Image (tube, rainbow, N blue to C red; front, side):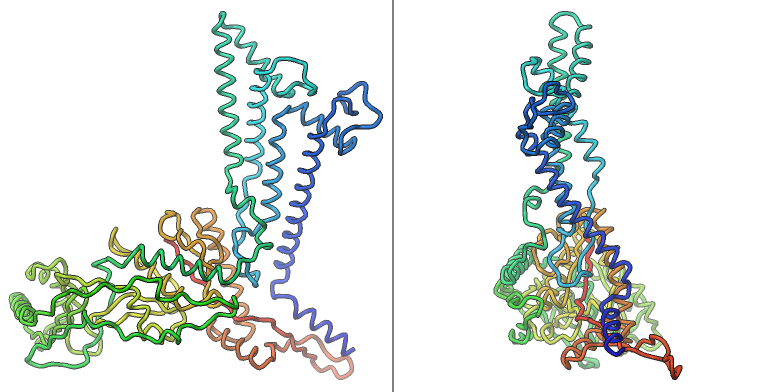
Length: 588
C-alpha cells in the first residue's frame, strides 16, 4: 500500500496544474510532427514517381499496359504520376516544393524561438494561410499550363495530355477560339499577348505562394540546432556595440525626465553656486558585475571596451558671476509678478540649471508654478520648469543651459551606483541636477509608457533601457520580447540570447506574442499561489533556498480518508519548480 501511494503521488506530482492544456499541446505537437513527416514522405513519393514516369505503365488512360510497371514506386506511383501529368502537365512539378513548405511549417512549428529549457518560455508559432496558397498555386498551374499548351502544339510527346495537361488544353482551346474571331495576323498577335500575360500572372502567383525566408527554410529545425554559449555572448557584445556606438545620447531635452534631488544643505542670504556637470560619477569595480549566469555555462556579461569613451569635457568653468546675475534677475522677474522670495542656491547640471527659490511667507506654491511660461519669456529661455522640492521649504526653478553637456552611456554604466544597485531590473535614465546617475527599477513600474514629440529622445531612452538590462542581467535572469512594427528601432537586437523570439515586426505575430505573455503571467500567478508568495522575487528566493538545501518544494494535499479510523489522509506533492527569469516586453 505504501509503495502504491508513493507511486500515485509521484505521478500526480509530475502533472502540472493545467494538465488538460498540456495534454492538448502535446497531442497537437505530436500530430504536427507526424503530419510533417507524412508530407515529406508524400513529396518524395511523388518526386520519384514523376521522375520514373513511363507511358507504358498501367494506368487509367493506358490501353496496352505492361504487366510489370517501370515506375520506381510501382503501380501506385505510376497511377499518381499519370494523374498529375494528365491534369497539370509539366507544371505539376511545382506541387512538390509546396508540400515541402507545408511539411516544414508543421515540423518546425516553433522555429521562431530560440531553444529554451522551459516550455513556457516560448511564444506560439505563426500559422500560414494554407488554403490561400493552395488556391494561388492551382491558378498559377492553370495559367502556366495554358502557356505550355499554346507554345507546344505538337502531339509527339509521351505525356498523357501534352506538356500543359488537360487544364492547359482547355485554356489553349478557348484562347485559340477567341483569337480565330480576329482577322488575320491580329489573332496571332493576340494569342501571343495572352500567352505572355498568362506567363507573367503565373510567375507572379508562384512568387506569392513561395514568398518565404528561404535561408531560414533550408536551415535545420530549431530543436536540432544549439548555438554555443560563447557565440551568443559574442553576438550580444556585437549588438550592444552597434547600438551604443551608433546611437549616442544626443537629446538636449532628455533631462526633463530627471527629478531634482534635494540639495545637501541650505544657504541663507548668500546664493550658493555649485557646478556638478563636470564631475563624473564614481567608477565601479568591474569584478562586482562580472558574474555569470547558469543558463549558459560560459556566458559573460558584455564589457565596457565595446562602448565609446566619454567625450572630453571642453566646457569652460562655470561663470559664478553670470549665475549670480541670473539669480538676481530671476528675483526681479518674480517680484514683477508680486512673488516675493530669495534665490538661496544655484545647482548647475549637464543640461539644466536649477535655482532654489525660498518664497516669502504667504506665497502659494501653485502661484509660482503657474508662472513657468512667464519666467521663461522674461529670462529669454526656451522653457522653464517649476516644482516643489520634497522635504524642503524651497522650490526649484529649472532653466536650460546655453551649452549643454553630452551624457555618455559608458560613463553611467561604469559607475558604482549602477553596479551596486539592488533593483531587480535596473535601468539608466541619465543624470540629475547634481550630476549623479539616475538608476530606476523597471520592476517597480510594470506598465511604463514613454511618450514625447518627434526628436525628444524616446528611441534613445528605449535603447538605454535595453542596454542597461543587457549589461546587468544574463539570459537566465531576464528574457525579452521586442515588438517593432516600424522595423527600424529594435531590429538590431535580433541576435541576442535574451530574446524569447526574434524581434516581432508583424502585427499578427505581435498579438500572438502578447497573448502568450498574458498566459505566462497567469501561469506564474498559479505557481506563486501554490507556494504562498506574492511576487516573483519571493518565488525565486524560495526556490533558491529549497534547491540549496536539496529539498524540493511541496505542498500537503488531502487525498481521502482512512477506512479504519476515518481520519483524513494527506500526501506531500512535490513541486518541480525552477528559478523564473524576469520577462520584459517592449513595444515601439
